[in-house]
Length: 327
Image (tube, rainbow, N blue to C red; front, side):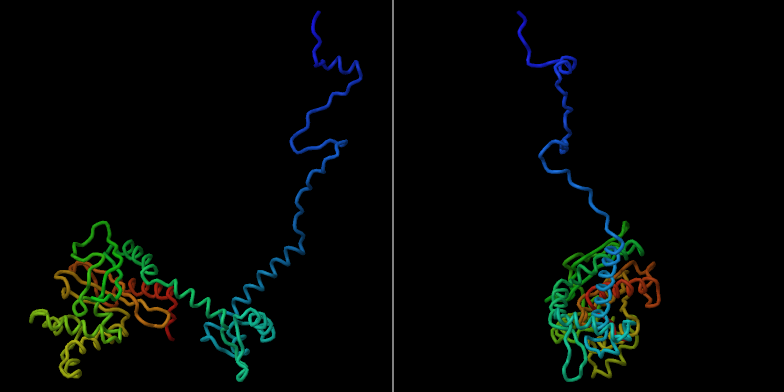
């Protein structure tokens, strides 16, 4: 006998009145099933919800504008002065100030009724300043200078031995110079060192410069009288014949006037350089950006394209460090 099978063909099933059940798809349920219904499609936000979200974003933007306006006014201002600065009505600004006061971002002086930055705002500022690194801020500037001018550029900070190179960028066809990362630059005969000497009111820096002058030979000392700094002798007479102080005051005037200092064949023979300072949020010079090249094809003039590009990059890096120049 042929053994019986547990399966039946479609015709046989219909003959016995058995309805063939279609296989269900994953996640689907039949109408007779006791399982949970399929999840409904997500609802599209209504126009009212979209408007509410837009209003919240606009409110946040206005609140930040009020807070930034207070900071740009020196951290303290009257209601009318702040409202005029941000271009909003005093009543509207007052509402935002009330919310900012609740969050500790703004405080109010009970004596003058002026608004000032609160404790939380100051904590945010302190955290941001801790992250402000002049070397990191200058790195993009070095790359842009290299690509735009095709010149060697570097950034230096003041170390315990003097101005020390910490980042260095060279073009495809660099000028051969014996300075690299870690090199200590002269305070008296390099444009980098001169910017530090002229702008840093630091007895330690002046002592390093005096030591460098004392160890220099007559030929190097003579360069202080014959380089492109102008009439240093007259300044030396004013400073009681101290050539280091004379140079210091001359460089300070040069940087204040042109935003940079330059040298020609004083630190390295056949090499000219232009340097510009980077300032931190307190206005103190914290680093120096320098571009150099062969004297024959390098324009070291303060009104030239090299100095102009260097000033722009130094200003951009200083802004990243929180520096806001006084108008």
